[in-house]
Length: 553
Image (cartoon, rainbow, N blue to C red; front, side, top):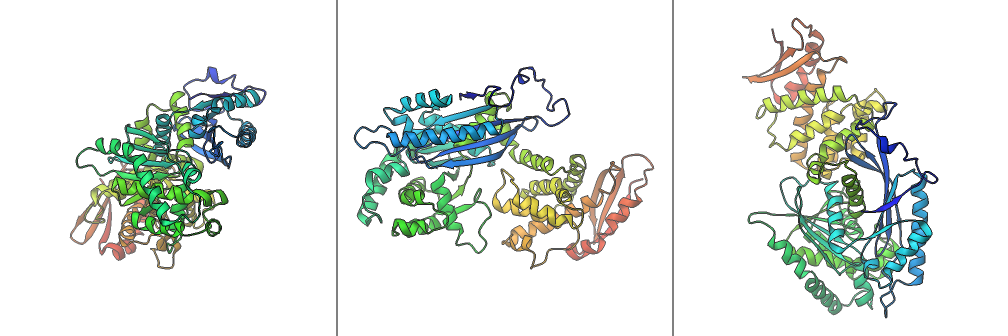
């Protein structure tokens, strides 16, 4: 993926980067961060991200996100060319984005143009104008390459686990459908059917008459049939893929579906929408006038014009794939440009190494962001996981999914001290809840925050916001069990230096026996013993077991 390398006159001086050593810190010992911008020149809008790439962690965080409604897809109806007005809007947006990127001292601006420019007879002329006036190199990506970048973007923010995923990105001019797992993409497809294209070519009356709507659905089905057939052929027997939807259309529909919840999610990444709920939203939108759709909070003026064609693509694709639920992803092509840049600059070994540790990477990123003592956090996490492994069916009945949540909560349980030592567990809940934990679903995110919240002081109460947010009985049970394990593990963290090598746990009758193995022979562990024994009443209330603490001879 090419891009504009910025000169010392208008960006950070790169003269020292050629001589960089493999060290992950600079000469002052600070963590090495590289800053890059990615611009996606789409059919309906142009987006830019400025990202800080942590060299040591091989991950990135978004510093700035900008969007401009350039409407390049409004091409000349006779010639199919980009109109002078559309090119002027696009050029002005790119000029502004370039200035913003330079102000953030990025070392490179990576730019990709998709279907509108790709298909226009004068698309390459437009890109030459961009090069001449702004000195920006724009990659004119093919449909499959666009699909690959979308896959990388989704992969950077979502844990695929062992299940294959179908990724659906509905753009203005094209729809990308991808079948992939954590290791690689099995099928990359791009179809020339998009929200702007359908609205421009087929929507003459709005609301769309029922007969016209049926025609649109048939047209979408016919257009997408080769892509759907291709992914179906590559799904192995017994596999049940997860459908991930990304794009402005999907996020707007997700926001409308979520608005009916008693407690709408703070963010839509990882939010699940059933086909039944989707159908209700689509039926509601289809009978509205553009003015009525504009009055809906999640829909801006331009989105109100194209949301119905876009939603019909989403609805029809779900029907063709035979899936009953989709998961929303806020990450897509522009984040994929960042991941691709990292791959090309040797900051990632491969896609799978990035995917397989996405949860660990994002947690460690938050640990560093909030200046958590990582050594002590890892010590607490090790004790907590040791307790988890040795007390199954006694202190907890978790099916294995809670172990990863316990680790994340243990690593972040003290992040609230970044704000204040007093009642820091409440601050920890707030920071975790409102932070970014990639690879975790919304419900998992809430559980991690709550486990950290209840690792000290009072047990959960109905009036607590952190408890109410959990909603399901299973999630609350998991939080209660994991929080108890974390409470016991954190009780050992009384001194800066390690004194407990290992914590052994077993249940004998109605007694929970915790045995402390010291780091050194004859180590005095009376402080840690007292700290654990102070949890006795709570352990008895939660489990019915009497706590006994011993020090290994």
